[in-house]
Length: 175
Image 1 (cartoon, rainbow, N blue to C red):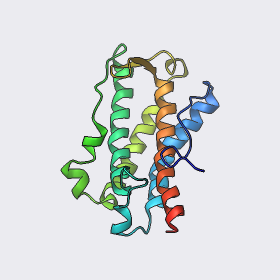
Image 2 (cartoon, rainbow, N blue to C red):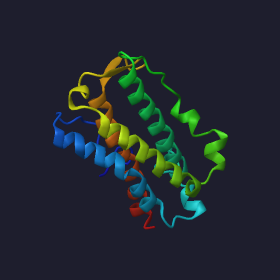
Image 3 (tube, rainbow, N blue to C red):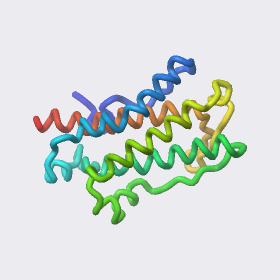
């Protein structure tokens, strides 16, 4: 039986290699088109369907991805411009309840998601190979030091994870 909350499994970082780094960057780069395809043709009612009991709706998932990835790029920029900065966590559950999420349709969000990921991928491709394991941010809630490579792997997984929430829901509902 599939785990609806973790359809692709829990996050696991693969060992650093240039090939793996490039694969992770490709996943991040492809996210906007994957989300576009995953949500294409869904009705307003379908977009308001949670992917699991107690989970976010498809609409909220897309906004969550956008907000989360904005935070991610900011964290990358901090790590590239400061010495092991402490990042500010945020309340993801509260973020999906704000007026912009409620009022902005995902069709209006898609061009911004595409532009933002193009910008982020340029930043990711500019990072030198020796910086992936030597530049860090500190996450105060998790009490861990995250390398750029760890964050890249995490957000590549995050991209696949939430896309799978939508595609698995569509498959389960036969949409």
